[in-house]
Structure formats: structure tokens, C-alpha cells
Length: 278
Ligand code: 2AM
Ligand code: CA
Ligand code: CA
Ligand code: CA
Image 1 (cartoon, rainbow, N blue to C red):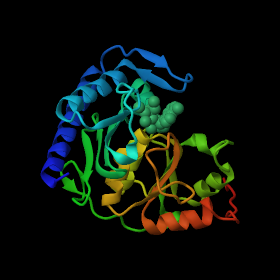
Image 2 (image 1 turned 90 degrees about the horizontal axis):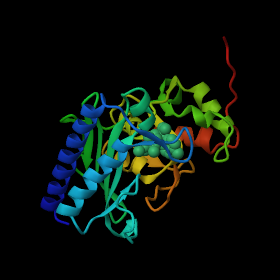
Image 3 (image 1 turned 180 degrees about the horizontal axis):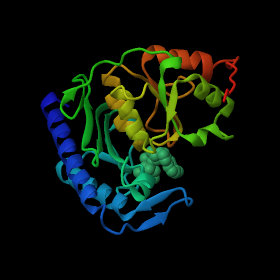
Image 4 (image 1 turned 90 degrees about the vertical axis):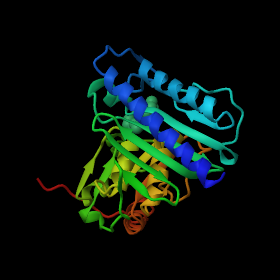
């Protein structure tokens, strides 16, 4: 793909994301019909489906050879191997629970991967009107302002994004390691939108983000943006991410902090002790 075509794809993706965000902003006053997917904690609304449909229609019209991987499965039925194609990875609303309950702190996330490589990332918070975006090799931006490379910090001075769920006993990872990490960090926050959390790492509001169960649409936009600010993004076992995996753990941070957290908490055979003084 030449750089001209690539730029056109980016411009389309950004324009459609801003338009979809405007639609979401305008429908917030409406009664929102909520359905459960796998449980009462796993919501979907007609807006999630409508926004994904909006992207599917435009991509099919302008880029009929591209593939689509969307959370709501609107374009399902396509036979493809994401590692070999150009694929749009779409989360029409990331943070549906926030969309329903708080009417803020949700985002639209678009990642465009070519043969498994993140080429374009766009994460848009329509309530704050904040758009984070990047094209491979062109830097990352926040509302038109170029983001600097991440600066380094230590665990003691870090603000980390961790979902409280992962501090409870779970089948994916030893929660004692997370509890220790939480005690040693300066602060931990839980945004409720994995994509926004990654965007916040990219712009320096957070120093790191750890998630234990994400799908490609949760992190695809974030990875493309994070790579442009020099972040390291891996699984919690320090392995590269693969968009072919249905679910994965994800850990993003600046390189030195990533290494410190890997060595002292996530992969350590001797987890630092912690205590709570009140
Ligand atoms: P979603 O809103 O697009 O489903 C916090 O809930 C974060 O975890 C959100 O980014 C949410 O994305 C994501 N998430 C992934 N799988 C989830 C699930 N089964 N239930 C709720 N949230 C999930
Ligand atoms: Ca969902
Ligand atoms: Ca999501
Ligand atoms: Ca979603």
C-alpha cells in the first residue's frame, strides 16, 4: 500500500470516527435500549450495533477488499486471517457500561492493521471531544497536538490503570501480584474504557495500564497510538500481542517502567511484600 492511499484511509477513518462520535453525543438524551450479552455485567445497546453498522457500510463502500473485525460481529461471515490482511478492528463503544450509567468516559476505538502490524489508531471520546490518533511512522496526536515520547518514571511515582476486578481471585493471574503492585504504585485508577486507558498512557495521564482479558477491538486503536510515543505493549508474560487471539492480557507502559513492573511484580519469583497503614 503506498503512502497516498494510506493517508486517504486515515482521513476517512478519522472523519467517520468523529461523525460516529457526534451521533453518539446527540443520542445520549434518548432512551437507550440495553440488552445483556453473557451476564448483567456485559451490556450492549442498539447504539453499539448502529455505530458498528455505520463503519461497516462505509468500509464496504470505499474499501471493499478490507476486512472488518468488530465487537458486535456485524460483518461476520467473512473468512479471513487477520495476520495476512488489511483489517479494520472496531469497538463501536468501548465502555458501554459507562455509556449507559454515566453517560461519559466511553470511546470509539478504531485500529487498522496491515498483515498484523498496527498502522492506524484512532480513539475518540465524544463527550470530552478528545481524539487521540496515530499513523505508523508519523507520530501520535491528541486533538491536533503532537504527543511527545513517553518520559520514564518509577513504580513509586506511577499512576496505573487497573480494573478492580483483577484484584479479586481469578483464574487468569495470581491476584496477589496485582495487590502488591497496587500497594507500591502512587495511585491506581479504573476508567471503565480499556481504549481510553491506553490513550491516557499515550498522553502521559497514566504511566501504565494492565488488563487481563481484552479482545482485539479493545486494544487495537491503543497499540497503534502507543507505539508512536515509544511505549512498550505486551501481554503480562512479556510476549508480543497477536490480533488473532480472541482474548489476551495487555500491559502497556514506558519501556523502563514496563521492565521494572515485569521483573518485580508480574514475572517475579519474589513478589515485594506490602502492608496497609491507616
Ligand atoms: P466494552 O465496554 O466494549 O465491552 C471495562 O469494562 C472494559 O473492559 C471496557 O473496555 C470493556 O469493553 C472491556 N470488556 C471486555 N470484555 C468485557 C466483558 N465481557 N464485560 C464487560 N466489559 C468487558
Ligand atoms: Ca462489550
Ligand atoms: Ca471494548
Ligand atoms: Ca464495545
